[in-house]
Length: 185
Image 1 (cartoon, rainbow, N blue to C red):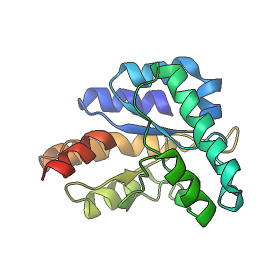
Image 2: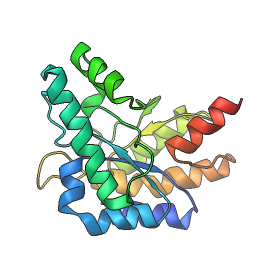
Image 3: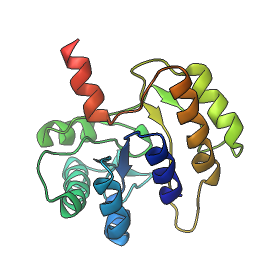
């Protein structure tokens, strides 16, 4: 689904942040390089995206952050630490300690597209466009954490959402661009 989303973003001259699972980056380095080369941001979404990650000890949480960041650095050549989104958006006291120790910029979302449960691209697009406001961070999925599973409705919804944003005079940006703009206001 990622190539289809990249095509839609290119057609609308829009950049986005892809919060990537480290092991997926390692498995698909060419695609990861394409994302970065197109001007999109690679964010850290842990190494393995375990559904049990919230229950891990601090040291294990740190390892998830480090391994995910290392996979991104392998693609981008390093530089600044990528923003981090915990799996399932879940946080726990051990995770909070690990994030503080690693000094990661935590990023959640303000608008969930529900593309992880809706199968109809039009419903996903309508939901986002009905609720979106300037400065929102929209959660969408270009892949799946379970092997062999995909979310084709999300990929079909992206062009509709981008057209709707353009009609409203809104433009998508990376999370880091949004955060830089927000701190200057």
